[in-house]
Image (cartoon, rainbow, N blue to C red; front, side, top):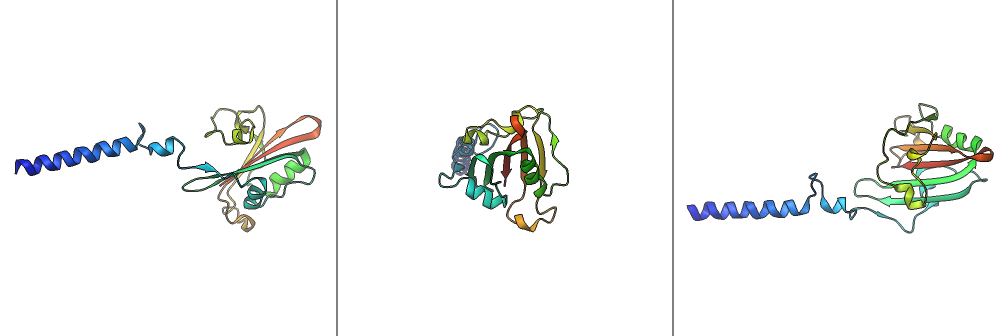
Length: 169
């Protein structure tokens, strides 16, 4: 009987050690913490992000960039461009947010640095960008059936121009 108990104890200890080696200090998957469970789709860019969000990039836009981050649960789509302030506000209005663009304080840290992948600062770290967020299914925007949430930041630049940052999942 003692041998059987000892065998069960050793087996339980081995399982515990194996499980501990696969999790990080916060109990999460260590591989996820190392970034192994997500990656950038190197074949996807602005066209794919724009198509997912169903956002038309204005014809006068310059510096258009986009990316798609593949994740285990939901992919993240990024789109950014520079256009006139008026066109940036039209893009924001077209999202049908329940709240208009408004200045958002810098009192929170962004999750990761997705726009850093595009060579840009995170919009949350800038001074004075206006922000709006929208849940397309919540506002019955059937045009964006695949998007669960879209954030838009509009950073006013010189000369009546603005940089638009869009992030969706």
